[in-house]
Amino acid sequence: MIINTFYIQGLENTINTSIHSKKYYKFKSFSQKIMSNKRQALFVPVDAVGHVNACVGLAEVLIHAGYSVTFAVSTLWAGRLTKYGIREQLLRYDDDTGDSDPAKKYSAKLISDGVIGPESTPIKNLLNITQNSMPYFVDRLADTDIMVGELLVTLKPDVVFVDQIIGLPSVVKSGIPWVLVCSCNPLYLIHDTRAPPLNSGNYIVYFKII
Image (tube, rainbow, N blue to C red; front, side, top):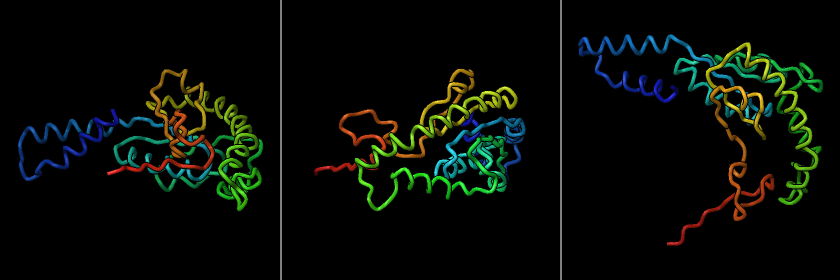
């Protein structure tokens, strides 16, 4: 449906509006009818700034296409997304305070976990994020799953966009179409021994020999 909506918008824009034909007005009426019937899109990103920002970019495209977009985010993001036309569904966690800055919170955590800093190396990054950071995010995700499960019942979205380190059982089992968004290192999606280890901070360099 997303592709069809984009197609209708693009096709209508290419029609010469100076041609007052019955076919054009019939098509325009059909297009407006579809666009007025707003579909619901729900985004469930990791609370970190990079993940949310990436999802905002996708959300803006959907809003332009006529979707109503809701973000399920923590109270750290209260009032920060409405200027983009996004509805906020605030999730409450025990370790969040209303006046916290999400950028400061997670940068401080990654520094504390040894993932960011002058002493970091690929091997240290891999060990520190696995041992120190991942348990926190997985525990937090368990709470997220419960709250999102309740939200799916009340909001009834037509599609869910999930940008998380692991899947959400509540979304997978809901029967609602969902999209995996990977705004972090693409190595999360590459399971190949020839690629650098996940969470190492390394990246793939492709050399083409001519």
